[in-house]
Length: 333
Image (cartoon, rainbow, N blue to C red; front, top):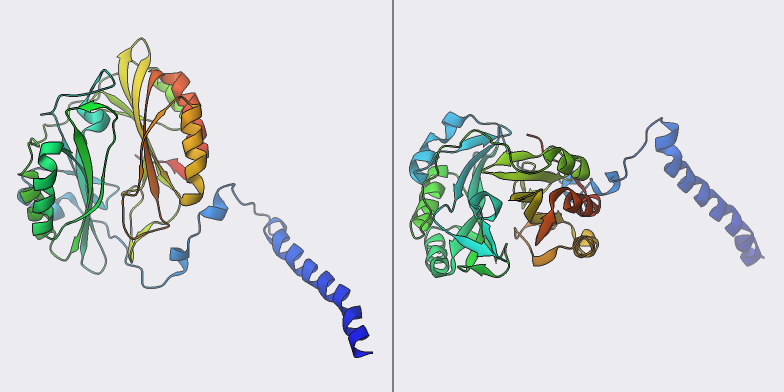
């Protein structure tokens, strides 16, 4: 009889469980709120963790010692990232018959961020020739700066060029900068020139913006459209500012008549990778590289570099599918 009463209770238990689940699902609607399509993936395990170390705002003057150690001045991005660009103007690189402008795919850069525990993080992406690769690597190791990726951005390029992601963390930013300077001194990286005023490019930039859903900007004769991940990204216990090591970029180099060479990079979590690769190929893009930029990022991010040449607006429309396949928003200026 006890067994029969337990069986009789099962439908009531199941019905009650279903009511609880339904009430939970309807709660946002009953509260008068809706959830954006991407919102399910915007919360990460890191947001529930305690003890995260967060970046603090700084002023340009706070980084004068770093500028002196690097021998190059930089600028402040979003009030927290001290950024120094080092385009390889010394290199004449050709890929697939296109002479690559430095701002398209030859731009070394490093960014310093100060944290509320007094420490400083530096991350960056550095362009080196194959001849420079090993000696640059040795200098990083000698100065306690990590490499987190060694990879390519271009196909069939001449001369052979490599890209190295670097990572350093410590309590003295000048020491980090001196270590980077020692590594840069083993390459032919020139000192940057003052940025010229933005010039119009021979592209339908309004059409590109409308196609990608972004407001791009001109940099060194290249039209750039940048997106950042919506999630909070961490590196170990350090919260990374939006865009540090986690951007998707679409860089358009004008070729005349509305045509462009596009060198791009998509930032993805694991579940997005295959959709993006398929979307890129359907857009006519050649895949160059699939890799990581960091070692301890959370959520784990993957990046794919691609290359495509054609009508700028048409390609932007085709590439919009890769934007829609990832959890990104246009970067703030």
